[in-house]
Image (tube, rainbow, N blue to C red; front, side, top):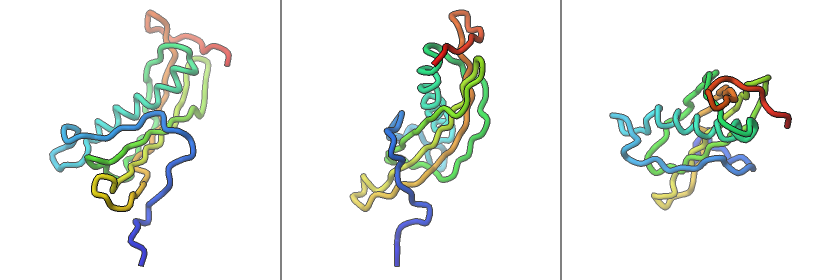
Length: 137
């Protein structure tokens, strides 16, 4: 009988834009990693390709979707993958996928699951925090 969970996946072939291990101070009252911690890391991960594309400062203007698929636990290796899915005149929409690798600290077989999916929109801003047109690619 296969003891691996049904939702086990492999990490994407691309390099993650961000990789972290949550600590006990990142947990909620139930001992799971606080959703707000994950949201903050997703915003950071999503902003990185947006900053590169904008060639400068961006501001988060919308969280278009955010789905927590599975909990994240202390000690998981959490990997964030971010890809631009759309650009407008001043805006950049980024898809962020989050995966957790577990079992490393217990010395057991590693299990990888997709824990979160999100889509965020950023706007390129100038030094006065006003929207600016994206530069040509």
